[in-house]
Image (cartoon, rainbow, N blue to C red; front, side):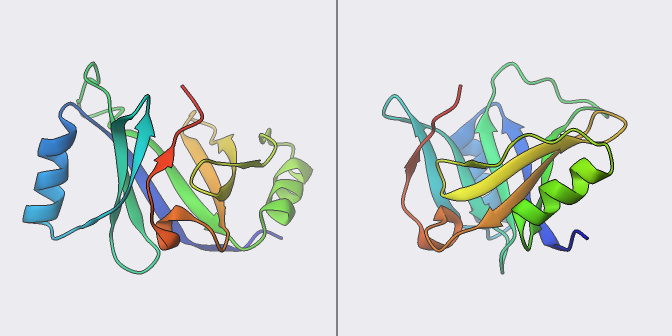
Length: 140
């Protein structure tokens, strides 16, 4: 059986990273927990929502915002990612193999019947969400 602990993060796209960072920091009081780097440049960051919850922001200048497709995915923190993957597969749902991401969290991906992407997360003792420190992204 799968046991979801909480919503870990919601991922959004931003046309202007620093304006977005400023809004969340200055208007909503959410501090940056860590940045994502690629080729020596910041292209995303995690915002602290309190406790173990975050908003993940990535730069995407061409993103189109409308009443649809505003959220890239949502992420659920699970207690045991291996057990979660086994349970999901037992239900006949496709799930990616787990991967240790650049932020030192275990992750796997599924999609709901509507195509909504869902990331499954299991934190480690080294996870950037708690340990801090910028991380170099290993995906394109």
